[in-house]
Amino acid sequence: MIGPVPWAVTSPNPNWTIPAITLICVLTAVTGAYGLRLSRTTSDFYVASRSVTPWWNASALGGEYLSAASFLGVAGLVFTMGLDMLWFPVGYTLGYLVLLVLVAAPLRRSGAYTLPDFAEARLESRTVRIMSSVLVVIIGWLYLIPLLKGAGLALNTVTGAPNWLGSVIVATIVTGNVLAGGMRSITLVQAFQYWFKLAAIAIPVFVLAWWWWRNASPMPTVPPEAWLVGSANAADTPAQRAYTSYATLLGLCLGTMGLPHVVVRYYTNPDGRAARRTTIGVIALISMFYVFPPLYGILGRSLIAEPAQVPADSIVLLLPSMVTPGMLGDAMTGLLSAGAFAAFLSTASGLAVALAGVLDQDILRPRLMRWTGGDSNSIQSFRLSTGLAMVVPLLLLAVVGNLGLAATVGLAFTVAASTFCPLLVLGVWWRRLSVTGAAAGLVVGGVLSLTAVVAALSGYHPPGWPGVLLAQPAAWSVPAAFLTSIVVSLSTPERIPRGTLRTMVRLHTPEAARLDVES
Image 1 (spheres, rainbow, N blue to C red):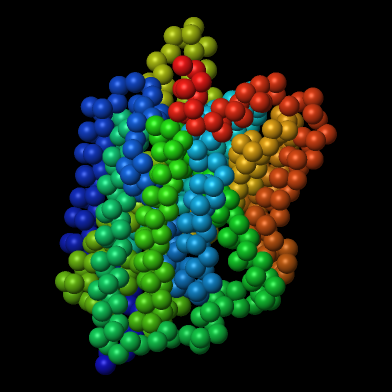
Image 2: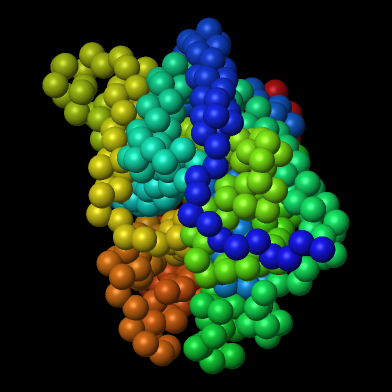
């Protein structure tokens, strides 16, 4: 029998990892360049002319949704904090079920391109649109920061390169792909990358599980009670741990529908029925993927003698070469490195398109039209917006602390859940939502959740319940936003949009029925 292996400060063999990362980057760039041949109109760049089939869209959604937090962060959380961190993959997956039930088909029927488009169409208010645009940009940048950070961490882990290099590589390739063909281009890229990521994370874990079984199945090197509770939460009371679990699950479930790169992809479906089929497909695909990342955390606890010394977010990349040194371990590390970069590239591509659409429509193009006397090339302004969407989070990396990848992405989910979830759910299902109520809900949810974000990024964590509530605010910020929207709307019935009934009929009437009526 071979016991748990000691932790050694060694980098994987770059002779395997560098070619693997280079190959996935080249394939991504070539696939994106192919999209340039297909993209000619503004609709191609924004929503791929609304012609993406459900299976392609489900694969592309899986590709862009499974980010660094999924590929590296979930395993790191399970490795360091125990099995109660399985709430993260559960929440990520359940978010699509909530989206399917509540808003998937109505979003597509709205005919909008972006979340601000939907907000303006439903509430007939330019003010609410601008507020939504600001929140989309904040959420998108908050999500991009850990992605770019993870790219730097991954490249540093497997090659020893400086952290900034991986971030710059991902930002450059993503910007080039989006500039080439917008949504139509990245749909091809993301669909391919989902299946590559699935293979990259599944194959090594089967090999490592075989190694674990062959060596008499050593058990985790921590007491069972600590493994189940999570060592990082050991000081919390049972009530505080329960609150953290429920708040995490709530934020992830309700935040999915407010993520700009997720919502914009629903507008690429031909109709509402296709949007529902896309959601069912993506639930199956991401459920299949999420079987594997927690296994790296569990195997790491079982196979590494000194787990406290291993960087959590690097466990997926380091585990193969630590437990199976030599060519086999190096080959698995190379495959995982390429899969991690595929995760960074695909999610960053979706966010870049979503942010570019909002920055183009609401910030850049209006100013270009004023400066040029109304003569502005829409595709050109979209491309300029893409550059802006990627440069800002790249610069913000310098001021971000050492938060884990999954924790930082979780903050983006919390802001989305506290702002766009009430707007979408009430906007789709409650005809008494007023302009003032929607705006008040966005303000309250945004202020509360962003306060928690600022506290987390600055490292402020007070002891006891205040720190627990601030670390996971979704359980109180989301209800506060819903309640504010409802109470203010009931108090301002005169601010209900005049075209509400017509809009609600459009959202809930299948396209085929509308065509029959019109004909």
